[in-house]
Image (cartoon, rainbow, N blue to C red; front, side, top):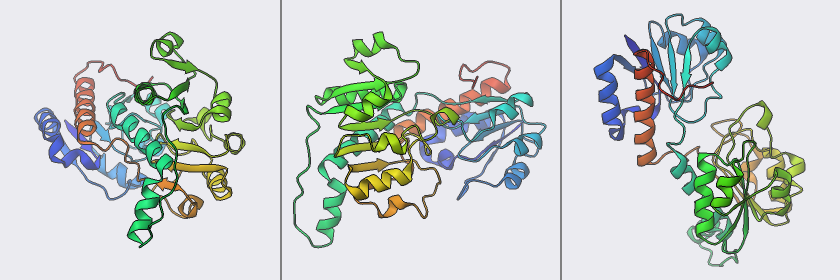
Length: 315
């Protein structure tokens, strides 16, 4: 039995336990890509493989159709929009993912970005390094309102953090558990209420056709003057050109992005927008989350190839 593994962090020492576990189970072909593989490169790498622990590669219908031996695609991460799940289902290939393992890491990053935007930490650091010494008046988060769009594992964790520093927290989710929200002092609201009324809006929904540009131009320009926008989820959820325009005009006080429609980020108006913090999709990149994610991704592929439902199949 052979398994291809492409996540870049698989060979890091933090994943020694997961790697050793997988190597005891099957022959492992671990490749550390500099960028996502093309379809043809991936087809060649998957030749003869029964399992695939997938990083950020686009697993298209063409890839799936040309890998008849493949039985399981285990996504190293919570998102699976880069896998053509319909084609996989048609081919009888099980797709799994690793929900929840990065919730703390991403929620803490989102909170950090809120603090950075509110106090202009990155901006002032750059100014000091450039020889300037002119403190900027920011704003406190205590007593402000935050709207969390997507109240899943990450949204719930973020709500606990924002409540903990004295913010009033609203949340939207299409499958909102209002009893849970109420128990944790989170106010259920719809998206338009959140974007119109909250000082900070933080996006934490998965990317799919129904959520594409969920933070549209119209919604961005309906936000409060001087509001802050955070996207630490997936690219394509926010109209990036509209966000850049809102930053240029001063409509938005600041914005932070850890995910973009095109990655790596190139030729984006966000690159020249003022008060924009741009990160390289780093939300899950903590030692703790990497270790949890690696172990669960490996457990998923081992269980499925052993004939057991791992419990984390993409439906």
